[in-house]
Image (cartoon, rainbow, N blue to C red):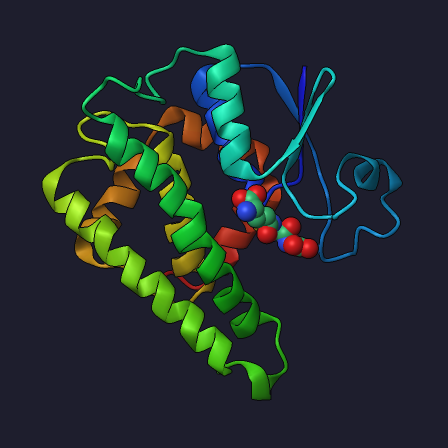
Length: 214
Ligand SMILES: N[C@@H](CCC(=O)N[C@@H](CS)C(=O)NCC(=O)O)C(=O)O
C-alpha cells in the first residue's frame, strides 16, 4: 500500500494513482498548523514539505519525481509516452515545466498575496515570480492551440503537472486564465480519476472552493 503524505502538490500524486488504479492511502499533513510536532511525518521528510510518499522501503519527495517513479515502477501507462513516441519530447518538457516553470513561481505569488503582511504583498520578488509564471504560460497557450492535451491528443502526466499549476494560479495566485486554458481545465476536470482524487483530497477541495475563481 502506497502512502501519500500531504495534499498541496500531493494532489498530483493522488490524481495519478487514481488514473493508474493503484491502491493508496492519503495521510494528511497540516502545514498551516506547523509540522514541528508531526514526528511521524518529519521522519519521512525532515525538510517538512509536502508531498512525500512511502512505498515499502521507498521514501520519496518531489511531486514530479514521485509521478515518474510510480509510472516507471507500476507502468507501462499511457500517462507516460515511451521515449520513441513522437509525443515524448512535449510530454517531458511540460511534465517539468508544470513544476519548475509554473507551480514553483506561482506558489510564491500565492504566498505573497494570501499570507504576507499587507505592505509586502506586491514586493519585487512576488512581481518577478508572477512575470516568470506568465512568460512560461505562453508555452502552454501555444501548445493548446496545437493539440487537445499538452503532449498531443492523449492525456498524460504532463497534464496533471501543468493543470495543478494553472489551478493554483487561478484559485490563489490572482491569475485570470485565457479561454483556451479555461476550456482545457474544464476538459480535464471532467475525468473520473480527477473527481475521485478531489473526493480524497478534502482540504484541496475546500481550498479550491473557497478561493475566488479567476
Ligand atoms: N517541487 C516540490 C515543491 C514542494 C512544495 O513546495 N510544497 C509545498 C506545499 S504544495 C510545501 O510543502 N511548502 C512548505 C515548505 O516548503 O516548507 C514538489 O513538486 O513536490
